[in-house]
Length: 263
Image (cartoon, rainbow, N blue to C red; front, side, top):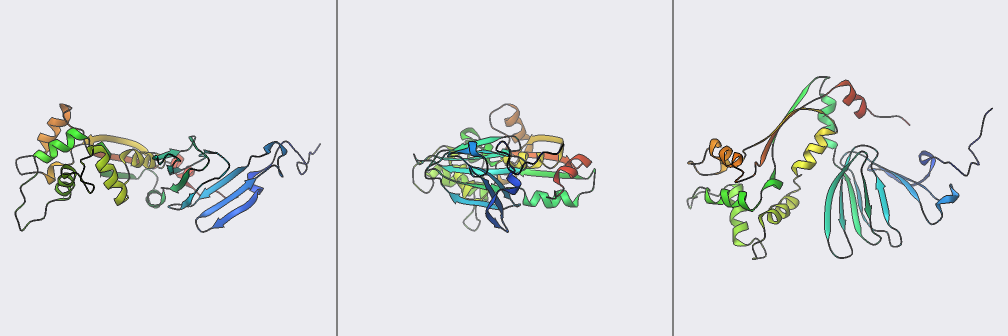
């Protein structure tokens, strides 16, 4: 016996939903009560974001939003009605909500790593040595500040010197913020990703073979401060490690998960 779903009020398909948006950035399809009567005053949307694309900032005047991530990794930024800003990443299997009236946008973070994953053969390795700005706290910033080299009039301070000096002077507003807040604002202006976001992105494309937190600041400090000094401070838990080393590999399973899907 063959059953037809054409007039079935219990099921429908998002793949065949109404096209709301479609461009080089991705697409959006929608199912409403017209397709599934139980969705009175509700709707369900299927949003596809191409690599590095962004769902432009928007808000919903009369509806809350609940989103489930099917695959990939996305950056979500929300400015709520109380002017409180939040930014976080979600990966496959995770959800988030946005209150009615809150400005928000969603960005697909995966473009560059997708290209690397496509170029690596099965079993190939990716080695990453990266800066973890989000691990700079008050104690770490003070430790670095005390060990900065004295720049001559003909020399420009290093990037770390400029950041620490601006932070201790009180930043652009003149009031000294906590180091965590200052470096987060600076990183946001520069478009830097946090270490958590980088690890999430790597983990969605590669199998982690090795990871460790390592010293990163010492090359920018005075000649009297060497890697061993920073390592000792990290081991004593005086400061945080602000760098990491990562090795990931491709496998047939990761290649299949990244392969384009038809339909």
